[in-house]
Structure formats: C-alpha cells, structure tokens
Image 1 (cartoon, rainbow, N blue to C red):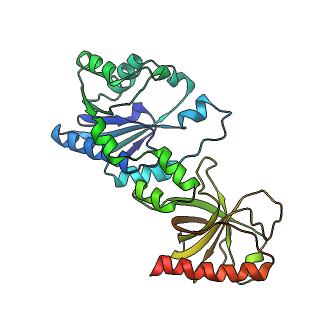
Image 2 (cartoon, rainbow, N blue to C red):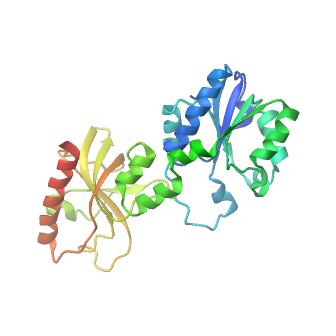
Image 3 (tube, rainbow, N blue to C red):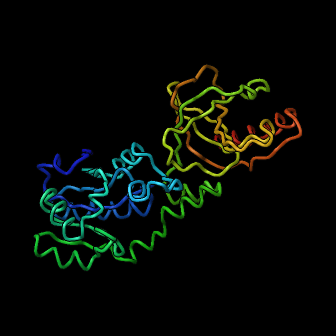
Length: 311
C-alpha cells in the first residue's frame, strides 16, 4: 500500500476507485466497505483508494473539546488498512480552510482535478463538504458533469454488519472486551512507553511495567484487570494488566495508571515501547485491606489470566 500525505503526490494511478471517511477502528463495517471497493476496482480494472484525514476533524473544528477518544493511532490505522487490501491511502491534512470547501468544491477541486477518480464508492448516509451539505444525491448530479461514476453502498449491506465505532467505544469503556473484539475483528491494541514507577509490585512478587500512552486521544478501556498479550523487543508474552487508580496503594488518589505484569519475563524495560492486546477482562479494580490481600488476589488473577491465554 502506498501512503500519501497530500493529493499533489498522488499520480499515475490506474482508474482510481475511491472511498472516503475517518475509518476509526477499521472495524468489520469498514472492511465491508473496503471489500466492496476492491470488487468494484476489479470490475473497472482500477486501483483502490481510501481518502481519510489527519488530524481528526474534531481536533481542528473543536480544539477545546478534550473528550475525543479514538480507536486507532495513525500507525495502527495505516497497518489495518494495508491488511484490508487497500492499494493507496491518502491522509489529507485536515484544516479549517479545507472544512470550508462546499460539496462542489470538494468534488471538483480535490476528487476530480487532483485525484482523477473514475468511481466514487459511498455509503448511503455519507455526508461531506461544508456543514456536511453534500449527499449521495449531490454526487449523482455532479458525476455526469465531471466524468466519474458513483457507487452507493446500500443501507441493507451496511446495516447487516451492525457495527459502528460508537458501539465499540462504548464496549471498551465498559470493559466489554469480547464485544469490542467481535466488532473490530481483532484484539484491541494499546501501545505505551515504559516509565519508572514505585516498584511496589516488585516488592510483593509481581513486578510491573508502567505504561505511558503516547497518543493522548487513544481510547483506554475501562478500569479493571485484564488478560493481555504483550509484544516487545524480546518477543511476545502473556500478561495481566491493571487500569485504574491503584486504591490499595494510593488511597484517595485519582490519577489513573496502566501497568502490566508480564509472565515468564525478567529484565529491564524502561524507555521501551510495549504493545498490549486486550483478550478478556478478569475483574474490576478494588481496594484491599493491605498488601497481603492484594498479593493473594494477584495470584488468583494470574491463574485466571494464564487459563484465558494458554488453555
């Protein structure tokens, strides 16, 4: 897959067949659209193109909104779209100026004059252009004028998948990892830099790597203890991960931490990037009377996590 950060660099592509959207999560619904895109491209002897944006439009249009949480980092989205079989990915630099383009300007100036599309594949409810004024009806009016074809993905095809990024975010926030993975079609990932901690886990036989999440907009699942897979330089390992305020240790503290105990691994990991994939939630976070009670619970958690991961 070729990746472009400006339409100007998009050249010499045979019969571009394009779809557009944010594609956050690249979930089963998105891949349904991409499968249709590939099928149409094969029929047209063309190449598939996904046109998406960075930064996310809400970051530009509502800069004071700190509630935006995304399912994918930029690198994750690129990797997932490539796995889905996309030939070309255009990551358009979203700006206020771009947001002011009306539907006609977007189609004429970007899709036709710069990208030279032969076909445009759009979901039945897709809206675009300034104030989301553009609809499938506008595209059907404009397509004969500019010499491209419009392929609508019907409501029945999209709705049959019954997946949305909103549903996935809700499931992850509730710790419902199984539902999220089912909608996504893969285990939800989280990448963080290992930073120094209090080393209390090490003192009770459960050393943890404390993770600082690099992307501030990446959605973090709800508080609790999870069975996870861990990828790092030394290889792939199983582990259990805690998200929360660690109430047994930090009584009254509200700052959230993410720490993972990696099974069958010894060594220093400071300043290393770890990727964890959530497999299943084990339990909610809770406060124990003392470290002895916490240690006993962690021993039970480890048994459950290993049963989940290795049985």
